[in-house]
Structures are given as structure tokens and as C-alpha cells.
Length: 454
Image (cartoon, helix red, strand yellow):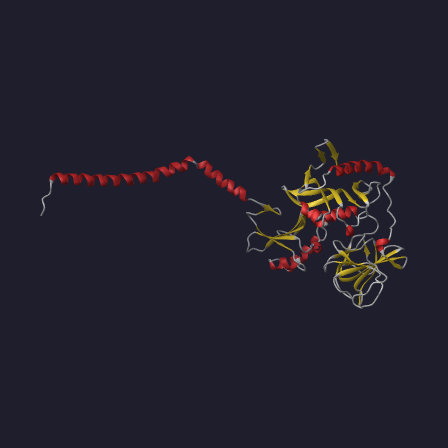
């Protein structure tokens, strides 16, 4: 057995004591830190933590259709073709008895028959598994309808708060009207507004490269997001026939578009029964028939368009015929006055309510494009009678409507001068729409103020 050196033994004892003391100190330090340090840290920032929690709760709050999303489950969707509100409600726990009562109460507020495919709707519940407490429908971006089943059934139309700004657009036709509008960052719906304003002076079926347009119009915003277009306030179109203007004017006696002389821009007849189509065959007394393979006069104008495209009555009138024949397919014939009668052939179907004796208005949808009867593809054959004889409506000079009366001409001319002057100051091509203020437009170069308050 080896002899223990007293000196070495004393050193070994000291090392052991130091290790033990170090371990104990470390344990005590960590215990102290976790017990007191964390508490002190928590106590140092109590207000910040509470504020962060409150802020997160506030940020998560959102109201839709008047319902707090923290308290209600909201499932949004879009109406499909041939989908009915009754079917949706029944699948979500509403009985047929309540659905019938809803239809009765809604008639005087917002009839469920006005609901259209492609529009947004929402099912509202207290929980995803509960029955429906309300149904929301959006007929347009600026309003919604609430069908409420809580307590007793109620129906309410709610108008959203929105801001209307006056904006401008311009373009030069290089390849197509589509590129001139959408290619410059504008909404395609502007074409509807422009065509409506200039329909009597500009034939949009014959636009040409180099044509120019300038527009002043309204755009509606909700929370800074554009949701819809408003009225067209002024429009100009320049082509080989000159420069054409259309000014929106509203008073206690008049409302609509007028040319520079105060004559209504809308003539008594539309130029065509369908929009965004092309002429596939013109009025021709010596046309070679593509099916019968012989020369047969074509006493109408064919407008090719996709099946289902809406067909409009070109003027006010009364329906004489709405039926089917082997050659014409589904067709409608309308008498407009003692002089003019029109006919629309090869429809896929009639609009609801269109029947002999029904009164129709200019621009009203009467049916939809199809290829029924003797047709090679979807189109509408548009026929036009004058004093009982079929004519080429594109060569007809319709009588102009009466101008604004002398009592309102001075008021109109003031409005006309403001709008025409501003149209002339709009630069020709923009990469983005110009946004200007609501009730006036400021021209920075000449510091001219234009008052567009209607």
C-alpha cells in the first residue's frame, strides 16, 4: 500500500471543496435568476404586454354586412347560373315555411326575384355548425341586402359609404379599342360609358387606327379601393369625320347626354341590337346563301356574338311576335311606331316577360344570341322595316330628337363650356388614369378651376 503524502492529501481536499462550492454557487445563482430575474423582467414591461394583446384584438376586429366577425361565422360565395336563394337557405337550416315568408316580406324592399347569377352572397351564422341567422346579397359594390331571420324576418337594403372622384382617360387607337382602354390601365367598363355617351355620333363598329378619345368620368371608392364606375360627365371622339362631343347635363327637366348644340346624344334608335360583336354579313340583295348554296337576298344585318350575349331592342315599342319557326328559329318582332318595325332572329331564348303585346324600351334586353333555325353559328340576324319595306338600317337617317328648350340652354352652355374646355386640356395618352378632386378639377399649368358639380 502506498503511503499517503499529508501535503498531497491537503491539496486534494481543497480541490474537492472548491468544486463543491462552485457547484453550489452555480445552483444558487440559477435559482436566484429564475425566481427573481424573470419576475423582475416581467414586472419591467407589464404595460407593453397588455397593450400588445389589446392591439392584436383590435386589429382582428372586422365588420362584414353589419356583423362582427368575432361573434359570427360568415361564409361568402357567388350565385351560379340557375341557383336559387331558397335552395341555399334550405341547405343551411332554413325551413320552406320561413323561405316563403321571406319571399313575401322581401317584395316591397328587395324582391328575391331580382337576385342574379354572378353576384356575391354570404351565409351568416353564430357558429359554422349553427343554422343561418341572416343572408346577405350584393346587387352592386355600393350596397347590400340583409335578409335577417333573428326574432322575426326582416329585409333591409344598406347603402355603403363611398367616395366619388372625378377621373380622366384618353387614348389613341393603334390596334384595337381594347388595347387603347385596358392597355393604358383603364377599366374595360369605360367602353360601355363611352359608347352610351357617343352612340349617336360615333359608330363603334367602324373604329380606325388613329382615332382618338378623351373622357371625364366618375369612379367610386370604398376605403381607398376602387369598386365601380359612376357617370360619364364628358366625352370626345376624333375620327376622319371630325371631333364629336357628348356632355352630361341634368336639371329638373332633362337628364342625359347632349351634343354641343344641346341636342340629345341618344337618337331614337340604337345603331345595333348587340354590343361588342362584329358584323358577319351585311344587307345584300345578291348574297350567296351559305347553306342553300344559291343567290338569295339577305334582307338583314348579321351580328356574330357568343351564345348567350344579350340582345337589346333598338327603340321603344310593342312586341308583335315572339315565337319559333323552322328558318328563323326563336325570333321577336317589334313595332316602334307607324313607320318602323324591327325583327331579331336565331335567338337561343327570350328574356322573361317578353311576349306579344309587351311594351319594351330602347336598350331593354329582349333575348339572347343563339343559332336556332337556319343558322351556321351563333349570331342575331337584325331586320328593319320602314313603311312595310325591308331596308338597310345602316343607311337610314333617323329624325333628330328635339333639342333642349330655350329656358335651359344658357344653363347647359355653361356646363358645356366647362367640360369641353377641360377635355381639350387632357393629355392624349396616359399609362395610368388621372385622379382629380371630387367637385372640381384643377389644371396646374394654367391654374384654371372647373366646377363639375351637377
